[in-house]
Every structure is written in structure tokens, then in C-alpha cells.
Amino acid sequence: MNIDGIHYRTIWVAEDGWSVEIIDQTKLPHEFSVIRLQTADDAARAIKEMQVRGAPLIGATAAYGLCLALREDPSDEALARACDMLAATRPTAVNLKWSLDAMREAVGKVGHNARVEAAYAAAARLCDEDVETCRRIGENGLRLIRGVAEAKPGQTVNVLTHCNAGWLACVDWGTALAPIYMAHDAGIPVHVWVDETRPRNQGASLTAFELGRHGVAHTIVPDNAGGHLMQHGKVDMCIVGTDRTTATGDVANKIGTYLKALAADANDVPFYVALPHTTIDWTLSDGVAQIPIEERSAREVTHMTGRADNGEIVTVEISAPGSAALNYGFDVTPARYVTGLITERGVCPASREGLLSLYPERKK
Ligand code: MRU
Image 1 (cartoon, rainbow, N blue to C red):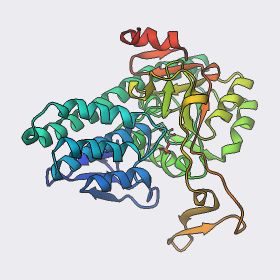
Image 2 (image 1 turned 180 degrees about the horizontal axis):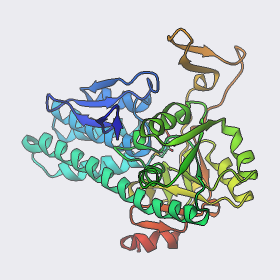
Image 3 (image 1 turned 90 degrees about the vertical axis):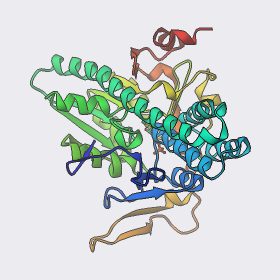
Image 4 (image 1 turned 30 degrees about the horizontal axis):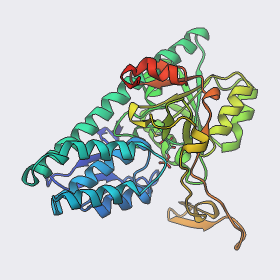
């Protein structure tokens, strides 16, 4: 997508031909800064500290992290060590494991001398595939938005989204936001309710930033406003992303997604989840019981970072010193609250049968 007229992906190989550049998402929306990863440790740190985040981009960063590890040592032992280290960075997004498995498959049988080249080629391929996958998710989701627009001619389609599942969370386009970009580009009047998404504020800091740069109308709302908006007919549909979806259609996504799904169900608002095949964990059948939920630092709850009136970026404490805080990163929305899954192969019911109708090769 474009930033000030320049096309960016979220991750790319630098001009030196080997180091890897990313947009430091911890600095957005106040500063657009590009940083360079030179080692696998740099890549792991970028994932852990959320300089990159979002399930597909975490996977892409891990793939390039493996390239950087193999540059230093192309042995089987180093490959296994780097895979373990990168896999341990964030537990919920399954794209991370998918991408490391794909990389291992691509380089495992290649001789040590050719490994680094094979790894960079595989990581580039994986990124290109992610872009194409997201573009197709956009086309499939666009049909749903167009359907709503046709049912209310001349009026704006209001979409509510949670967290950031836009191009910043992927390599390009995004998952939940791809249909919105395509609707906007097709001239459909679309407006997005952006959940602020406490505690890291991915909605206020990232989703609002990227929608704004693309010229899409949007309004940031506190996380607890969604129910009220839906009750008053101000939301036509919800579209969110996901970090892991079970074979039965349960979806893990940023904490707070479940509450929006409950409110959508109570108010007959369609609730869609957009995802690439790399987010499906075919080994799981019960999301609530089986998806590991990341627990992050309490400091993310008790402190906030932002720009002060004098322009300085400051971090402030917002709670009484000494209060305990609990910070689960994700929650699981059971399949029964999901109207449909928007994938690169089409839209299906959130169920085993629905997913298998799009991915028949997964039938046992
Ligand atoms: O903790 P984050 O910012 O990595 O969480 C991201 C989300 O929950 C996104 O909505 C999800 O990964 C889908 S990304 C296309």
C-alpha cells in the first residue's frame, strides 16, 4: 500500500541484498521509521516487542529470521535452533509455525552451500503468496460489502473492525481490511468504526493510520462502544481478522473480539472473519480449550504511550501504583457466532464442513 505516494510492503530485503527491513510499528502513527534486521535475534526481538505484529507478518518475519540465521551458520543444528527460537516468540498466531515448517521444508534437503540462497528464495515466495492470498480475500469480501451496498442504495456501508488486520498486519493488502480497500477503490461509500483495541491500541494507532493514508472514512471508538452502535443500527457488518482458526471454525483474535461477536449476534449484525489458509490450524477442533492464549506484560495495561502536546512521545502510568493488572492478548470466538469465514478461496460457513468445502484436500 502507499505511504505518501511510495509503495511499501511491511517487510523487504534491503539494498545490501541480505539484511531485512521492516516498518517499526511501535512508532506508528507518530513516526514512520524503517529499521534493519541483521540477525535471527533481531527478527525474534522485532516479533516479541511487536515492531512487527499481525499473524501473517509474524510468519513472514520468522521466515526472514531463518534466512539471517542460516547466513551465519547453515548447519542442520543451527536451522533447528533458529526454528525453535523463532517459534517461541509468540504463541497464538499459528502462521508462525506454518511459515517455519514451510521454510524447513524448502531448505531441509538443500546442501549447506546452497541453503542461504534457497532460504531467501523461499521467504520471498512466501511473502509474494501472502500478498496474492490477501488480494483474493479482498475480492471475496468485496462481494459481501457490495451486497450490503446494493441493499441500501446511496447510503454508506458501516463496517466495524477490531485490532489491526490491515496491510500492516500482513505483507500487503491485509485480511479484514482488504475488502474495505477494494470497496473504497470501487467507489462504494464505506465507513469503518475502528475499535481502539486496548491495551496496545492497534486500532487507534495502526488501523486508523492505514485507513487514513488510503483515504477511507473511519471513526475511532472506545472498545466498549460497539454494542451501543449495533443496538442503534449504526453497524451493517463486522469484519475482523484472526490469529488462529480451528478446523471447526472457532477463531482466536485480539482480546475483545468475542464481546463484539456476542453483541453482533444479539443485534443481528453479520460477523465475518477474514483469513488466509495459513491461519487455519487443522489439528484443533475446540478453540476455547485448545488455542494457547498469549499473556503479555501487565505494564501494557497500566501504562500508555502517546504524543504529548509538545510533540514528545511519552509513556504515562494510568492506574494507581501497586494495582495488579492482567493482560491476555487474545480471546476465542466460538464458530456459532461467526456468520462466515472470508478466505482466499471464497466465503464459507464457520464449520468443519464449510472449511472442507473450500479446502477439500484436507479431507481425511
Ligand atoms: O497482537 P497482534 O497485534 O499481533 O494481534 C493481531 C490481531 O489480533 C489481528 O487482528 C490478527 O492477527 C489478524 S492479522 C491479519
